Length: 177
Image (cartoon, rainbow, N blue to C red; front, side, top):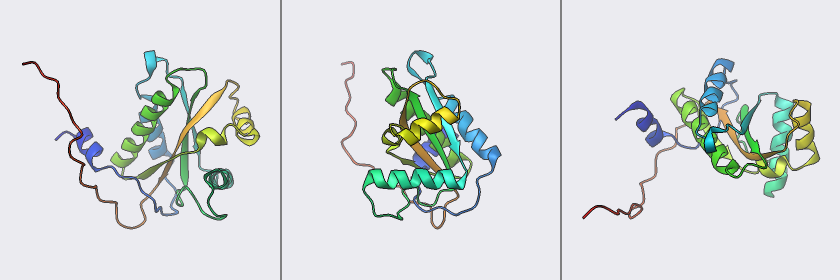
């Protein structure tokens, strides 16, 4: 099996990360993979925000926790030291699909590099807040963007998750007679 197909089959969501910093070189490679994701009409209407500043990361975690309705102190990012946030232009019809493809590329690239990942939701709600909009402005992002997802990244703490058995009867065929 080719390398990419093997990565697709073996990547799993990690929910327990070591505190160790992910090297910037690795983050750059993961981000580059995200930038090469397919997009509607090739428009590339997605952006990626890297967050490794612990205080900003913790603020986003706190907001995500509140939006998710969890008890105070729960970390929806499972201790991941790095977060890549994917956003897409709000007025673009395929924004969610395009952003989802970026997220998939980020997670596959991380797996290839031996870095655990997990897609964490609620980015949409975070970037609808005044705080989220101000964060975008502080980065020089003036256009309207919608949060698609967070890619939590870090080195796996403990055993790497095993693949679940694939469900049956999920493929249907319409073939020539």
